[in-house]
Amino acid sequence: ACAVLGIDGQLVEVQTDFNPRGALPNFTIVGLPDSAVRESRERVRAAIKNAGLQFVNKTYVVNLSPADLPKQGPAYDLGIAVGVLSATDQAPIDSVQDALFIGELSLDGTIRHVQGVMSMAMAAVEAGLKTIYVPVEDADEAAMIGGIDVIPVPSLGHLVEHLYKLSPIPPHQIDLEAYLTATDSYMGDFEDFADIKGQESAKRALEIAARCRRSDREMRVAGAGEAA
Image 1 (cartoon, rainbow, N blue to C red):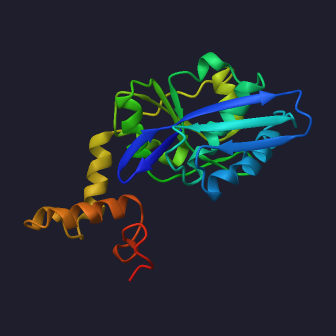
Image 2: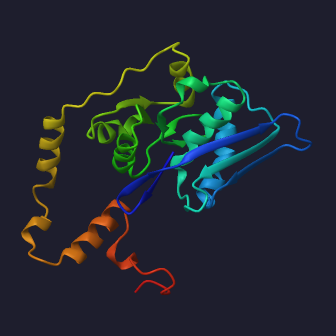
Image 3: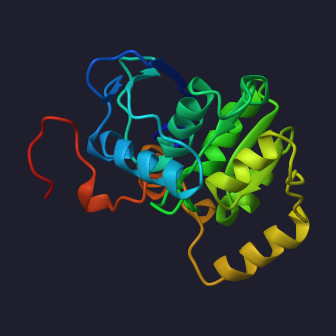
């Protein structure tokens, strides 16, 4: 999995411990997860069952490492699900090595769009990973980086079939020139920071806000109270 800090990605290792002899069924996520990450337990449980796989109702502990880095948002769903499937021998461990799994899970197992995929893909390339699995909707954004195989995955069931080589999904290819031309055409009516002289700190702050999908009114120093 991967966290996004400002506009930079930082890889997060999903460690899964499965205890089939646990006295009481339990599913715990540690490593400073926020509410959306903690709620992934129910999304993962339902998605695995609805994908036709087995969710063994025993004891799981999922650690998102590094433990001192806050984890926010639903982008960890797919990585957690793959960790659970690997721990219960429902996904080949050798196929999930050197790979990054990104995506929010619907209850039916569909993999949904998440924010910050480009930053995550850049972090994966810098770390030397070979493959990144992303929602179909985010494949173009991830493929812009280059240097890594981008696998667009529509659902958890499709992912498992791909990992077992039952129904391989080809790496996503993008016509970068056409993609950038279309983007430039869309952005033609907007102001460009290149036209602003100086104000580097202000421009940097707005770039970070745009990447995080926050408005300038929401930007504030931690502990400074409510936004103006």
